[in-house]
Length: 253
Image (tube, rainbow, N blue to C red; front, side, top):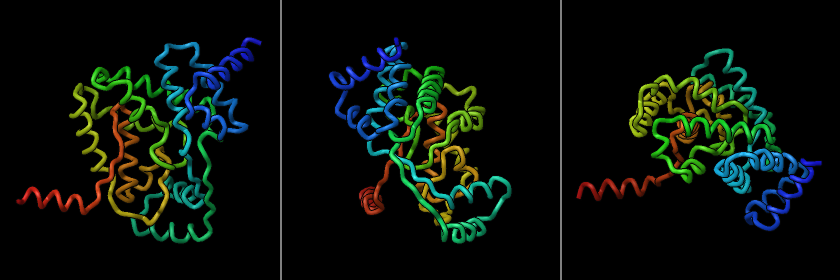
């Protein structure tokens, strides 16, 4: 009875005080609305900063989705069990993609309360425990650490823990945010080769490293995921080559 009352109160909040974006997310969610309401109910008992983060995440779900590729999933499974050269991976993808089945689903329609809550809690823990916590505002946290995806990659739970366990040892004694970023960036550059396999989709964050190679954008997505798993706020930005050339000319003259 109490939980039903809380759900009604949450709906009242959405209708009266909630943002237009929050309302739109719930309209998109359809049968998955109960999962989103469970998230809001869970954080209604916690500090307001957690409530704000949960509302931010849900309000910004509109327009975000995941792309599932049967061929990509198959390639990942193959690469988990055997090391392939870049050329072998390209050839495997060419073969697998010929019978690929691709689907695209809005996050609000399928994300479970558990996955959203686990993501929020883990993001907060990493942020709060980082030595540079005071250098990262709540706004930066919400925009550049909290998100559960980087692009349209298939969501796989546990990516934060997986990546943090791999990389945190490199910055155990580091207390400077910029130096921590530089250290992790160099380690990723050592591990990840920039060599496109012709795959138009980004692999799940937890498995981007399986290939050890990928397009420039896929490498950036992997680095963003690693940095966020360590409480380092980052985002992908794209600068057109023509602008870079103009900048170089300005430097020359």
